[in-house]
Length: 444
Ligand code: BGC
Image (tube, rainbow, N blue to C red; front, top):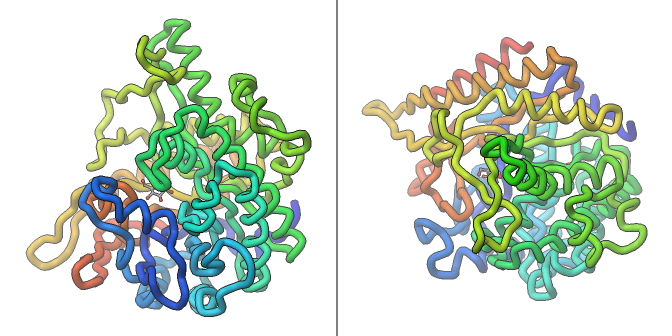
């Protein structure tokens, strides 16, 4: 293992996660440049409630209140992301000191409170000038990402506890480039593969840049899902295999083994250069796993241009977002990772897990979100089961510390353990916050 995961000493990382565009606001302040999400949100019809992250939770100004919430929780880790357009507004070149100063304050504030800063470099807010040059569809963006990683490492690497390179490259490829429901809104279907590969290449180059700059543990953060076939038919089983290749193994086999899954050989042939996979497969100190639910897949209908079709999972309770609540899926996923990748799997941190419910404050202002408590408790237990099965899980970070800008859903889906009144910015810890505080205090 390169780097020292125990830099802030702990047995287990307990905490919460957020992302820059979802909480910061202040999109025009201190020299921040536009990101693809500012552009996308401004297009009519893109965001469910017509909103944007222009103000969001205003964490750019209220950060110390947010850090106090983490302290009150007893958290020893906070996963936040750095807005590339704050640090390098054009997406290349010198650093914007006023943008970096915000993350200086945040990181110092965390360390003062004894909380380990887990910094993600890219949680989907690409500088717009890089999108104008082709975004992740072009290889150059991977090189720009490594330069940006070096700049950030230079500024914060003396204090950050762990780096995350990319957040969920699958989701960014699929929703941003294949289906167009997220920024940058491209609808390239399978041709979006290039946006996935260039993210992976950027990840590998960024890991090299981070290592060159210091000895901080590095991880990739993947969205992973156990994939199930809708029936026992060979057609559904084959479709499930292909979906699993795109969603999971494209971002695991490459990084942990230096190979693309066989199912993706055709797609890779057109995009991957000699030597790319060696760059992508840099040793990692940790793997970040974001888990929400399993996925059910059937063979595509005749008019479907894709080699799979997703079907709703029946028979489970659902969150306010309509997502099935399947805690066992998290144990299955973690045990499956260990069984599949063996010694190639670094220690795992559950870097996101949580649920949206339409919770409303009661007459006294408190939010009694019993459904979120049940969700979090069952998923923490699922992590415990994986640990008992011998999987090296080192942390659990709830999504999210705050209700925030939920991408294409705007402010209509609340994932926070803290309620945010988006008119005033006021934060109110929900019942799930108190539950999580007590759970953290108990430890394993
Ligand atoms: C993302 C978060 C998002 C959450 C809930 C994850 O895919 O990393 O940014 O808010 O899921 O949709």
